[in-house]
Image 1 (cartoon, rainbow, N blue to C red):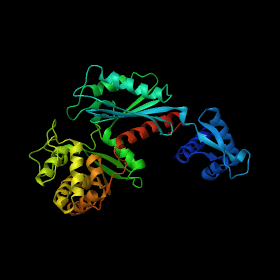
Image 2 (image 1 turned 180 degrees about the vertical axis):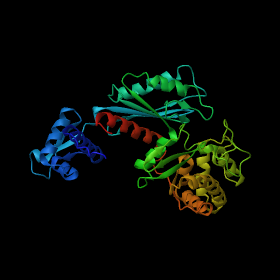
Image 3 (image 1 turned 30 degrees about the vertical axis):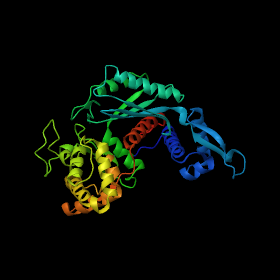
Image 4 (image 1 turned 60 degrees about the horizontal axis):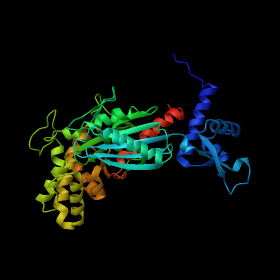
Length: 394
């Protein structure tokens, strides 16, 4: 027999505070009357929580609602976004992009740090120095949380980054340097998982609790969100579909190479080679930007690009089918440089071909979180961590 627990007064206050703070975060400044209407709380309860939150420095009066009668009920209360600051990183083999933001997720400063080759002995230090300089330039002296998106497996048990390919040594050195920042929490997450969070929260999958983001760029990966939760797997490897064995490649993947896997069909080099077969221009270097340009060229070419787009969609659908018959997500979002370039036109082609490969009804959408999806996801992740600390989020 279980005994129902009654919320203590302190627990009830914490719940009410979180409710009000999240409303101010999502909707912007509100009056006490509007907070009462949105929360269903009584007038004394709302007055009490506003006084309490002002004492903590999380909420402040920022003006009055002009159309209301002047007085206490017209005061506008807002979240003090400068109460804490965060940073986000998108780490690639050729450098990093970073952003400094406030508690509300508003960007205060951005920076790009290119890295040539394997970098030098002070690459990590230079990147951290750029972060701190950008923060100080925005009037930020302390970062509460930094979220880092990087390629590779992030072990759920240890938080360590494990490469599934050849990554430069400065990646690990950067993480170590960031963890030396005093009073700053550092969160490491796989880059595609962060892009999946961005599509879930602000992108193409905002109305879905279950979906798979198929990331199509230099290589291919996936973010899996089931019932509103990001799934990482036992070793952090959920979504490493570049290793998925598929027909049409020159061989099979191995533990240390994805060349014979799905990567061999839809990695950027393979897409560039396919474009050249179909008479479309594509840089022999085969990098992600070249593949993106080839897809855009095919779309602009009209009938001349149809055969290429059809074959590309067929290749993408093969890997998507392998994911869908196992997970049945109901929705696949195409992201990365290739998904962004292909847009709804490529997504529609993939959906039609996927319907022929799988008996499971699956909608295919083009990602809308944009080229900054990884950074957006990192900002959201860091913001969640800050709010858990300051708002007492569960």
